[in-house]
Amino acid sequence: QAFGFESRADRLVAPWILSTADTMPVDEKATQSRSLLMCCETPEPVEEELRLIQTKAKRTVKYANHNKVFMGHLALALSTATLMVIFGMPLFSSHLRQLVFGSHLCADTYRGFYLTNGHPNDAEKWEKVKAFSDLTAEQVEDLVDCGFIPGTYKGYWPNVCQFCFFSLLTNTGKTVQTTLQGLIGTFIATVNVWVLYEIFPSGCLMVCPDGMDKCD
Image 1 (tube, rainbow, N blue to C red):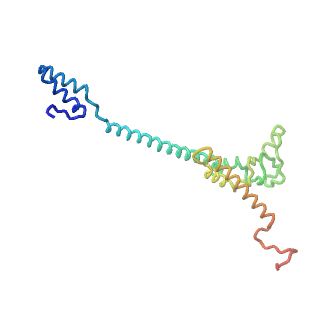
Image 2 (image 1 turned 45 degrees about the vertical axis):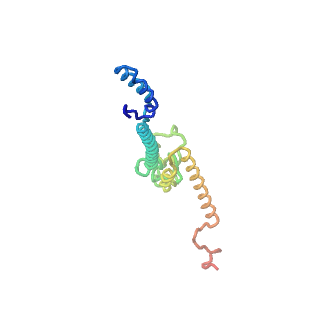
């Protein structure tokens, strides 16, 4: 303690230093003591620095995980918004609605181009165009575009947007799984309605057999 030996290494070499101190000159004694102390010192543990490095690493990993989740949600939001805009444009724009579903003069089952044959308001007398090369200049003026999707789908088109909205998920596998489940569910529901209409063609209306006014 007189020489300030406080560490374990200092306590081990202190007796030897004290025993040899009397046989050395003063300057040599001091130099030898300092060299022995420097040689035998043990490095103190850097627990504080290690704790700081570990904390920084944990924060970095945590930030990376949060950033990955955020980017996944952002990509999902952008994909959903893009599909909603694409499939919703026929409902938002009258020009695109006419391009997709055709003119309002067309019958609900018509697709493609038709010749009115001088009867623009009577779709039953129209003639479907098979080849544009066979048309004359006068017939081109009578052309009516009935779109490439039948008009019967116009009322169900909002359900298409809704189906896309609920089918998109954060990755391709889940999206395919949800889409297949939706398609199968829609098919089963359609078959169910078709069977019910075959069994009950009049629906909930009470129709008496043989034209009777009252049913037993």
